[in-house]
Image (cartoon, rainbow, N blue to C red; front, side, top):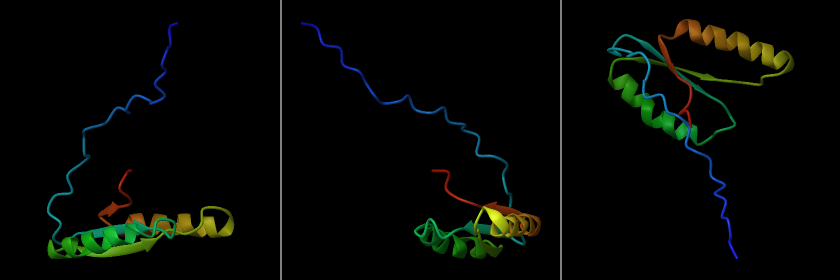
Length: 96
């Protein structure tokens, strides 16, 4: 008797090794930290990174994203546009 074993795991995704553009020196820049209420533990990450940005001379600007549907969604997207306009760079998640 012959048995075929199937491996249900997917191949790993291709990874883009390019980290993106260098932000350069942070002194004098405004760094945006975007968060929401869905991922509360991310606030701990921001608590670690905020003082590091400030120690590098950056001003930190927090923004909490809100709903994404209806009138509240329209308000969130307007706030997002304002947030993006007022920061030089933004940390919006860990891409995990």
